[in-house]
Length: 163
Image 1 (spheres, rainbow, N blue to C red):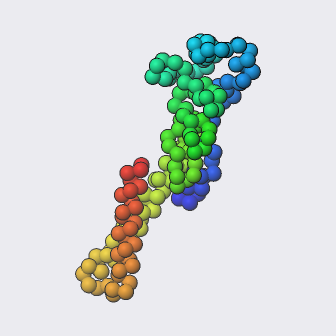
Image 2 (image 1 turned 135 degrees about the vertical axis):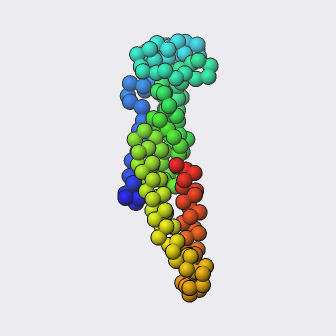
Image 3 (image 1 turned 90 degrees about the horizontal axis):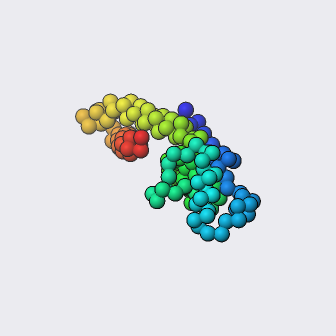
């Protein structure tokens, strides 16, 4: 399940805003916009029909000039993906993908299954670590096992911080 959810997180493309949020160049030409003030007024008129609550810091409509769209709430432009992503959480370098609206469930499942898997490794090898420390386990087998338990516990703590 860990591998399945990891692959689903990697392969699911991040969701982009619907077509109704896109600002077409034809609309710019239609309104004959020449100044920034006229552009903001036109954006306000277009945004009145859209379900937008969040504004920028200067109380203007959030607009992505790269993607040419009015940004809905919690939508942010990802420089690495070169697209606006709905409910963008972050761009994960391990996944080479943005974590957002469409793959957030799979990302959380990946973290959950990784924690369960690492807990299983740590808990099932704990008895061998105790035998190794008591001197009842040969050194040739004990040192690699001890290293595995140490690494799995360390990764478990790091993944817990991610969750």
